[in-house]
Image 1 (tube, rainbow, N blue to C red):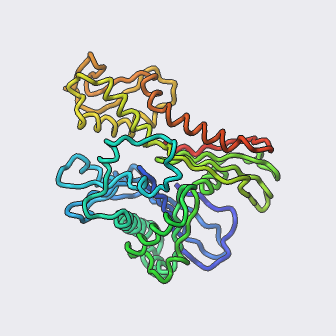
Image 2 (tube, rainbow, N blue to C red):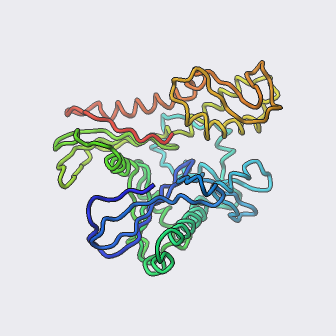
Image 3 (cartoon, rainbow, N blue to C red):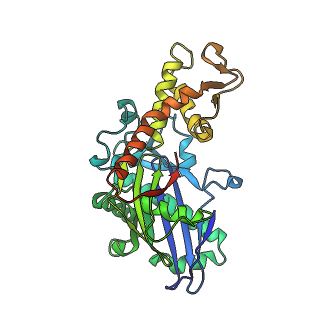
Length: 376
């Protein structure tokens, strides 16, 4: 995916990287900006372990370790989820969330906390460092292979390139310090220039710029307009109110303090686990391995297609030899009713609605527009 900025770039030539390390998936964008030209913002769409023709801009946020050493990442690491010879680091972003984001919100059951513990002898900072080193290297390869004179340009500008981390609204200095230390360990910056080269952008602010850039018309946006942005991600929901101070040039200000709650897409996956365990109780497919496989397929396919209009929903998890009609399993496909899938969304949606209502409750100005950036 490519987006061209409307305004010409006026500073020194630079490569700018943007890392969005999510709980379940990660994406990287970059721009090669030259003075006097309108820069393009491009996404990395070629990752190891993913089909080259897919053009997929996201990779799973997963690292596979063996004896404390990072061996595989992203789609390649996903292949070792059930391999006892490897320890898997996933959902590690949750361990960085401040306590203020965890209280009175959707809980992660003890089974999941244990399952997604860090590999033995590997700290959270080290996991981030290993993963950042990997995505930085993959970005370098993509840039070099898809940019004229890419090798020469990267070598000339890489020591000064700014790197932007997109982070939840609820993160503060402690979380930024962890990412800074991890970046230094990863070797993408040195301690002396980390403060100048690393930038932190809230997911709420990133979402409003993305929404405005990709909205076909912004006739609704005028001076004085107050609008809300809801960024629904893998583990958090960031809610922000903005007031338009000016359209040309575009100047936005936060109308109040933003909100951030822990109620993203992974909690839908957590809830569907309970639905499956109850539905398949007594079936030969009720073992943890089969249910984990179903959840992965639910996340990859069923959840992304669900919009509430389907009478039934299928999880394709097995082969034509997998049959248990009593439990709605036919030829490797488990059928769920619309109500069963909706149940998995209920608690998360209630949290999102409560967060939005809290944000709007004390606003005197009328909120005309709510923009949703949905990455469930």
